Image (cartoon, rainbow, N blue to C red; front, top):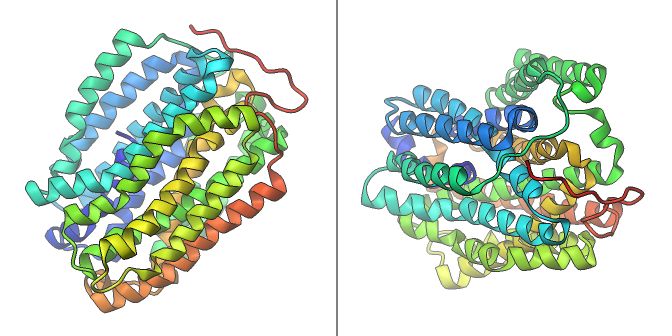
Length: 445
């Protein structure tokens, strides 16, 4: 649910924008309202799971997320929708790190690469299938049903978690860091508002919040929401930098592509949503295998090759415009992006978790998710302004087409930068071990 709602909204933007009379900034906030709170509180969600039980916090997050989803579907205005999307992100912050930490804690080290690969693949599939499912629901019913869809999914998730998933906890017993979470939210919120509304006072608030967050976390040490010793591993730090650029590139492409296909190329919501199906198929078919392969050969080259492939696919999307052919112009490019993400997602997830202490698995998972969400948040906040799209220009095919093609160069460049940083900064090695530290297997429960 959490990953699906990162992208399912994209295909609905032209429709909800028209129905709720939204500007470009309103559409940005519809996407960002969710990613902002998800990025700000996902670290707190991981820490809460480590202390109070990962399955317990996961189930609370599922319930919270479901209620917020229903409220999203009932929203009467863009302002209300943005507010409840922010609440939805809080629920996602509770369930997302818990799900991955439960996988990490429940499998022996020999099977963990494949298990995390399967988790990564299904997470990627849910992200990629969002536009397709959303397009079908929009054409058949209404954009509001993209949120109501979460109700039956939540019922299945709760039933499976209660029946099959063992409880697990971390070894830390300190109080959770609510001040750190609030400072992170203030920092990200102020910075994002400044980028979208082009106002200096919020930028100063955001900068002050981020500086205060760093100071508070350093003083709290291991009791912090973001323990400084996580970053004692140069590989952990480098991998999160790579994560930032990969997901910023993906978010930039996803935000513009489906709107371009509907507004400029004349595709229906359903057909526009199918453009991400190659990514879905490749992630579903290959992620577990890539995760197992990375366990044997290391994460270095799959990450670099995948980021470069996705960047090349972004550049190939330059062919999309008025009258674009799905088979000739759209499919080859999205398949190349999908191939790149298939090579990236599982090795990157496995390597990030392996680079952190086992006792902080939930927090390490939260850091990885927070970095990915913050990357998407900043990409969506900055790209429309950078490429010259403001007001209600998203409804003008000529203005949107020009902005779309400019955005591709930025997004592809971010992917290629991730590939370069992987080669330069990420040490090659088996993701199940961190150089200089023996691998340890957490005990379930």
